[in-house]
Amino acid sequence: MKKQLDIKNLLLLNLPYILMGLFATNFGEAWRMAVGADASAKMLSFFSTLPVALASWWPSLHPLDLLVGLCCGAGLRLAVYLKSKNAKKYRHGMEYGSARWGTHEDIAPYIDPVFQNNVILTKTESLTMNSRPKDPKTARNKNVLVIGGSGSGKTRFWLKPNLMQMHSSYVVTDPKGTILVECGKMLQRGTPKPGKDGKPIKDKHGKVIYEPYRIKVLNTINFKKSMHYNPFAYIHSEKDILKLVTTLIANTKGEGKAGDDFWVKAETLLYCALIGYIHYEAPVEEQNFSTLIEFINAMEVREDDEEFKNPVDLMFDALEAEKPNHFAVRQYKKYKLAAGDVCSK
Image 1: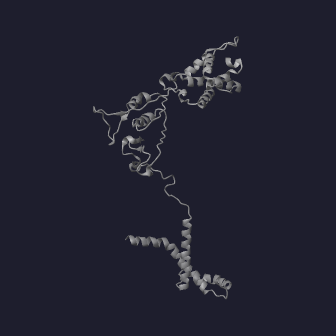
Image 2: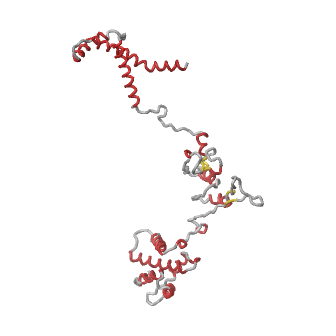
Image 3: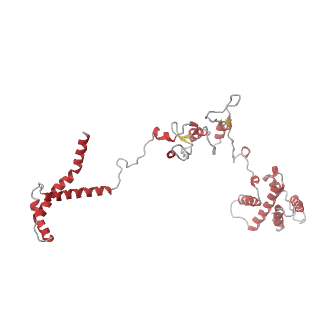
């Protein structure tokens, strides 16, 4: 039955070309009836015999005429085929896109069998945190963009559930200050430490061993509740001192144009000398900005007494007597070469 349908469809598709071929047999008949000694005379005679050949709608069954009809039908079929090969590709029924709603079978290859190892997207959809899944085709980046207005549940329904997965390190911005209060204790306790079999490890008393998170808080509003950063802990060379001084000056000059280079260079020399002294000579617990501010506050200058030496001058004099080529001493001597007004500045 199927074979009969295929033959029927094939005949229906090629019927126009068959009819065209049968009609073209009349052209073959006209050419056969034409007389002439050469091609031009034969062609003139062909146009005179053509109306006679076309007077009857019945095809000619002469072998030569059938050959002409076969060539015309085959040529027409070839032309249609070549035209279709060069036609534009249309996706009928998909003019507005081919996207569709995914099913569970579509998302299943991207979900980790272990629930805790997933980024939770919805109640039924997740994305594995494994960057090298068994099937490389399912590897995806872990970027998730959540867009919603205030109060739409971005924190409640997406952020908090993923924090509770506790499978990674997290950096969380908390403008409202609620995430730390509501999730801090949970992260501080941590997640159960898994064994080789994937089950939580227990101590000798049968209690589950947890791996706590180290929570660091940067609070730019209330510094008493914030972790602190000491740049002096990252100074290892004279080059690092200069980097710190350059950064300090650039971020404390305020808005507007910078001052004259003379004053900037003098300030740079002073800071290099004081920070160099703190780094190389002060105890570790005193290597901070508090000590630097104490030094600056102690730099008293008396305009009526040019021979007056403040505690910082005496401190550097003592260091110079012990270590004449000390980095801080060299910087302080360059600074002192400036005019007295610079020192008072």
